[in-house]
Amino acid sequence: MSDDQFRHPKRHRILVVCLGNHNRSPIAAAVLAHIGGQKVEVRSAGLRERHVGGPAHSNAIRAAEEAGYDIRDHRAVKVNRRMLGWADVVLAMDHAVLAELLAMTDGTPDEPKLGLYISGEDVFDPWESDYTAYQSCVATIQAGAVRHLLDLDA
Image 1: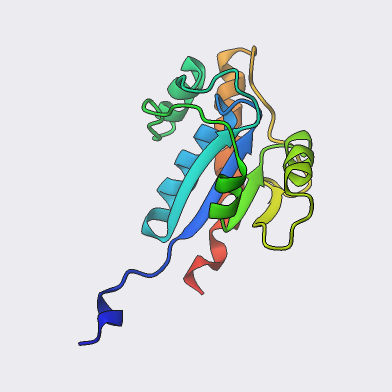
Image 2: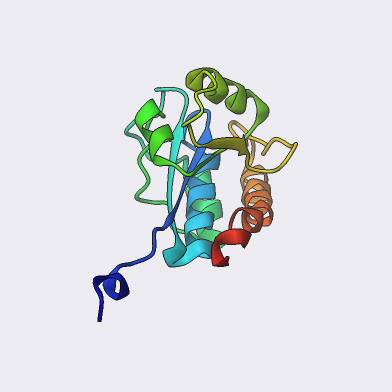
């Protein structure tokens, strides 16, 4: 047997970014990791420092758990160029986040592919909304996840 038979195939690296890494991106990372399984490595980050080191919002934790995803151990981090370089694809949760990410990369050709989590649409940020908004956010994220994982079997 050759060494190649014992090597694991490279996992597709996905970075999900929202504003604070407090609501949407931790949920999206959990959903993508769950659906993608061993084929993906998923991380999340935010553009702002406000929540760095802190957990996801309690309503985000609760809504994710209700849908079958555990984000209790999540701790917020701020996105940086090293993370962008690590990722095969970077998914912004809304147009404003995407614009800031594009500005960070300065159009560098070796940067990972940047795009919206849901093509052409923003994922609503439930911050300061009631619990049903968090449930809706989880449902939106779940519905948008599959398209990012379709080509992994090819």
